[in-house]
Image (cartoon, rainbow, N blue to C red; front, side, top):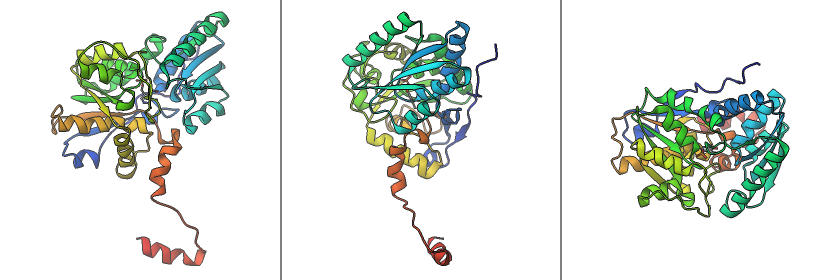
Length: 335
Ligand SMILES: Cc1ncc(COP(=O)(O)O)c(C=O)c1O
């Protein structure tokens, strides 16, 4: 069997040129998971999971996705000849949906899936039953459902182990956090950053107990709206084990950091990809991180994924149409 790969992993680790210095930090780095083949860290998961599917002789699969798992799965299924059907939440961003559709995946947008915990649980139960009855494996990027695929994400932790004292990870369901913490082991402290409007892991950590309480998600950060326990309990365990902290941040802080990444770092990321930096700011304020310590933020997804979130930043720099003869004069006004 040919190996399942499109060159995922070993993504660039680049130094911050503006945000870090502006915060007084000596070494802030960005791990550009947006540079994976389909634009998010999910390619590490999907490459490992599709390898498993092919080994078991599967010819089709069903999946759930808030967007990035679906984009990635659609691409790898197209490449390796699998048919896939993906249940997606209603508000999945256009970039992610188009990616799935362009690769030929069958998309079903399910009303209130993901935002409402009761409906989400019901959809999971229906998909699970369907998957067993039709012998079509269920692909969900979480240890609870697909541990072998998630082990593929642990490479991200291995790649960071020598570079950071602190790693900041955006958290939705908690699988990514768990994978990074497992991959790093005891070589760095790993911190969780979650939207306050969908706080499961962070809420339990802040309360100081072990109970993951389902919430009604109102966050607009695509990918981080997972309102009940998929891998949240597991992530909470690893969070405590690796001496991490949890930060519940406002959506506005995340959008602000996304605009800072675009305008001052040249990094084109989706909102979830900028969430980690919002956590760093909080950690500096609370003196959890010292300004001379090396810190890595995981930039989990590409800006092309979520064009609506980019539109606001772009609106500040409108274009204009000019006659050819006006070009030099206009340029003189700009530069
Ligand atoms: C861009 C991005 N960042 C972070 C996450 C969070 O991963 P997890 O749900 O495993 O916590 C996701 C999940 O879909 C995502 O798409």
